[in-house]
Length: 139
Image (cartoon, rainbow, N blue to C red):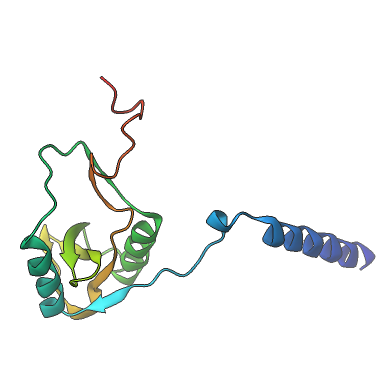
């Protein structure tokens, strides 16, 4: 019993030290997602596609942690019944967005409860968002 009490106190002390001294960039925060209808997803895509980003050659794609997490969450919601995900660019007129769409049999699964958008802040094609000094992309 004493060992349990001492362990709880020491564990609590380490936890409070860790939580109080972590840099802000390492502290998890709840990202915001917008659940979309098919019409809303189409409106956002069409709004973006009127003036798309200019990319002459795409080396790769940068995926933000928020986008990756939402795909993981959506994968759990799909119970393993999808074979992939497509990311479409969108715009609501003030923000650049990513639209996440699961695919089943290589076709977009466009059920309203499975479409989401989120900020495109760190998600997009390379070279626009990638490390140009990366050893991975050097010739």
